Length: 125
Image (cartoon, rainbow, N blue to C red):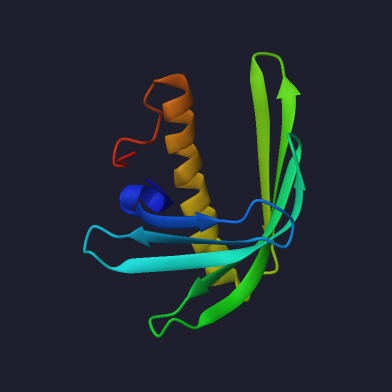
């Protein structure tokens, strides 16, 4: 489950090295498919991953591309994960991604801890 508790992964393909391509298709409850893809720029296990991110439109053409950096840092009792996505076309796109990532992280935390998260009452994980 990703993106505001509404999208489910339908298919995925991932490269395993810098320059490798990745592609994920998600399905909404209404059955519409949403495909996002990119290229891994940096893979530094277990510390950092950098990749591009671009949604396909209904005709299958790739839209505006952003860059995502995810870092992992050991902390007492676990790992801190920080995600930075930059290079948005506009504030509206940034806001939609902020909402999608935020709700995905609520689900990730619920899965990691086995506990429902505050404020997630209307969210399916």
